Image (cartoon, rainbow, N blue to C red; front, side, top):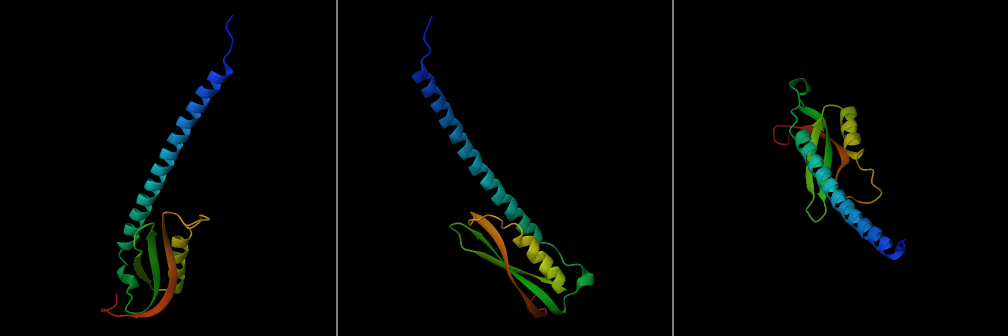
Length: 124
C-alpha cells in the first residue's frame, strides 16, 4: 500500500493554480482591449451620424463638448450640436452613463458641458 504524498500533491495544485491565474490575467487584458476597441467604434459611429434636415441647426443650438482619454495618449476633443437642450442633455447622459468605474479606466469618454451657441456655416 503506497502512501499519499501531500507535499507533492500540494505542489501540483499550486502549479495548476498559478497557470490558471496567468490565464486569467491574459483573458482580462484581452477583454480590456476589446472594450477599448468597442468604445472607439461607438465614438466613430456617433461622430458620423448625420443630423436630419428637419433639425436644421441654423441659428441657436446646444453644443455638447466631449473628450475621449486613453492612458498614455493625448485627449481627443469633439463636439456635437443639438436643436434642443433636452436632446443635448440626453446625449450627455448617454456618454457619461458608461463612466461607472471607481477608478480611471485605460480608456473613457466624457461629455463635459453644454454650451448654447449660434450656429453659422463657419462654426458647424
